Length: 252
Image (tube, rainbow, N blue to C red):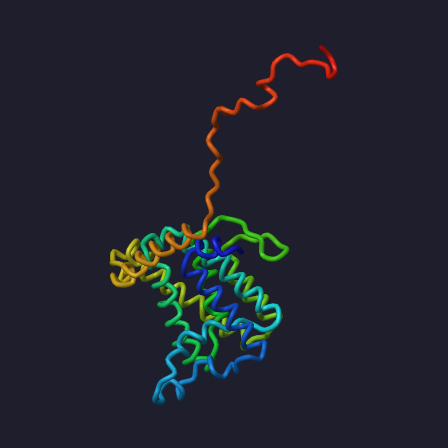
């Protein structure tokens, strides 16, 4: 992906994809101990608190092929949601979704399973929401075509086959988290007569509006525009076209 394409991509999706890839390469490459990024309460409650763990615990992919496939799945489904989903129409909506779903995943996976890394659960949550928004469509999942509604469950099955039950249980926490967001923001207002109790905070919307303007300026600076030269009538009279009747050398 070129630099222009990267900056033109949806901001939350591009940042999350890049962060997962970079952190995973650094950790699995032996440049950073994974213990520095996992979620553990003793390091968060000590002084000074290591608050980055709230975020970095969502940025470590699976090992080996997971370094490629996990960022790919994030990019594939998150960028589609951020740009095309009818539920994320205002600046910052998708960012607020990621924060809410991530918080629910962290509470459930930590409380019930004692998990310390939540990237796979966040990916499943994104895939679940993508499936909800694209009901009735068919998609390619590796080498097979499936109804999109089965996408998150196909991902769970694959994880179970490759990594076993404990990893799949943590990953599955993304489904109730995404469904809770769907219930509070869409199902309850539409069918229960309630209101959306998770509106995007105003300061988040303003922040993303300003970031969007900045991104457009950056892209504009990097893009080179080629314009054809205007057609002109040459005033040069010394060319072959201005010559008179030709004469044979040595002639009269």
